Length: 486
Image 1 (cartoon, rainbow, N blue to C red):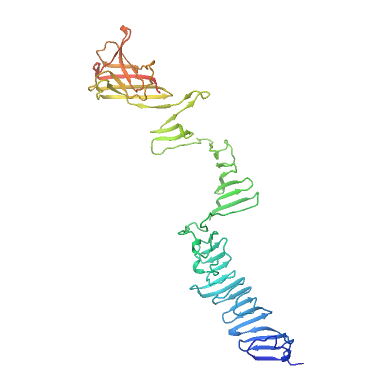
Image 2: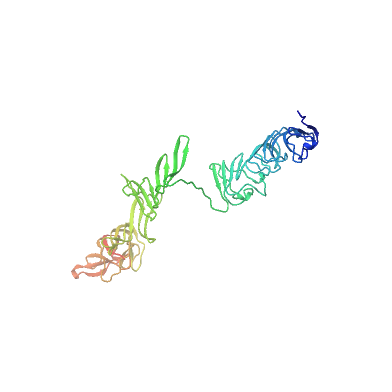
C-alpha cells in the first residue's frame, strides 16, 4: 500500500497546485501551523487539487467546513455559527450564537444571538437577539423588521424599517409607553420626531398605544360577511362585564353591559336604548337621524323634566327656531305658555295662555299722590286675547291725589277700540258727595287702566267722573273685569 503524504509544517493553506506532482494523493493531510488549521485532500489531479478544511483551532477556535459552507465552534468567545462562507472574520449565515463579543461587522444572517455587548452605544448590558440583518450594536433588544422589544415593552413601527443611516441606533429609539406601542407610517422610526412631541400616554390606560404623527390614526378589525366583531371588557369576576359588538349580518352596533345588551345603533341610523327593535310600543327610547325622539314606559311617565334650583323655563318648543310654546315652573307651580294653538282646521288659533297675580293701584288724574294701602291685589287668567280678572283695593290713606280717580297697573293693556269700552263690575264704599248713585268705570284703550265714574239713574244714567275729593281715606273698591287686549 502506497504511503499517504502528510504535511505537518505548512505555513499557508493548500492550493490547487499542491497536487500529485508533489506526491499528494487522496487522503493526504495538510496542517497549517501558522493558524492551526487542518485540511485533507479529496482530489490530487495536477493543477486542480481539491482540499477540504476539517478542523481549525486558530485562536482557540474550531472550524468544521464543507465546500464553502461551514460550522464554527469558537472556544475563545464560546461562539457557535452556521455560515455560508469560509471567512472566519464574518458572522454571515443562517445562525450565529455567542456568549460575548462586540457586533461590528455585517450580520446578514437570519438569527444572531449574543450574550453581551460591552460597547453597544455605551450600554454594558447582556442579552440581545437580532432577527434581521442588523448592522449596529443594540443591547437588550429584539429586532424583527419593524419591531423593537425593550425592557418596557414592544415598539412597532408601521410601514418602515428601523434603520437610520444604515445603522440600528439604540440611542435614537425611545422606550414604548406601555407593553405594546405602535407608531404610524410617518418617517424613519430611528428618528425621535417620529413620536408626537410632548406626549406621554396615561399610566392607567396604555396597554395598547397607537401613535401617529402628522396624519389620522385608527385600527381595523375585519371578519367575513355574516360574522360579528366583538370587543370585550372584563374584570376578575366577570369575563363579559362589557363590550361592543358589530354584527355584519345587519350592520348594527350593540353595546353590552354586564353581559346583556343595553343599546344598539341600526344601519338605518336609529339609536335604540333599552330595546332591540324600532317600535314605539316597545319599552325604551328611540332616536332617529331625522330628529324624532320616542319614549315608552310601562307604568310611569316616559318624560320627566326637572329644573333643580331656580324658577323659569323648563321646556322651549320651537318652530323654525322661533319659540311657539314654553313650559315654566314658578315656586313649584307649572305655567304653560303657548303662542298658537289651533282648535279647528288651522285658521283659528288660541295664541296665548297665562295666569298670575297683579297689584292694582289708585292715582289722581291731576295729582297722582302716593296713597297707602291696607290691601291691593288681584288675579288674572289670560286665554287668547281675553283677560278676566278680579281685584280689591283698600286704602289706609289717599294722600294728596286730586282729579279723577283711576285704577292702574292691570296685567295687560286694554285694546284700543273706540266702539267698545269694557266696563267692570264694581262694589265701592266709603265715598260721598257725588251727583249720581252708582259708581262704575271703563277700561281705557292702549292703557292698563280703568277710569272711575258715577252714574245717576234718575237722570237717564248721566255720567260724571269720580274725583279724589269724593273718596275717603279708607276708600275701597272691589271688582271683576273682563276685557280684550291686543
